[in-house]
Image (cartoon, rainbow, N blue to C red):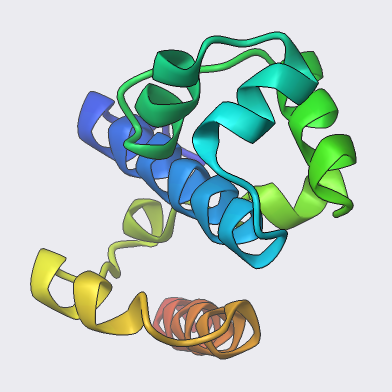
Length: 119
């Protein structure tokens, strides 16, 4: 697999942040609530959710534990743009309203498409 570009890494952290935000909202917690539970500042939670702050894996584990979810729920499965397929910004924003299951379905379709092109 080729090394990801800085844009792809930024997109990864944006996706992780959106998943944290979604899980926090589903847990009916404010950013302040989550910050108090994790020992992070509220602004760190806000920056993480916005994709502006890269966070260490053990901090994500603490966040996931406090949200009552699996750590794996916070991670996207791949860097879709590494395979040559990506969703442009407009489509990515459109997909935000769908569940993680629906998004996983779309990403799986992109993987199948990329695999079949290599044949």
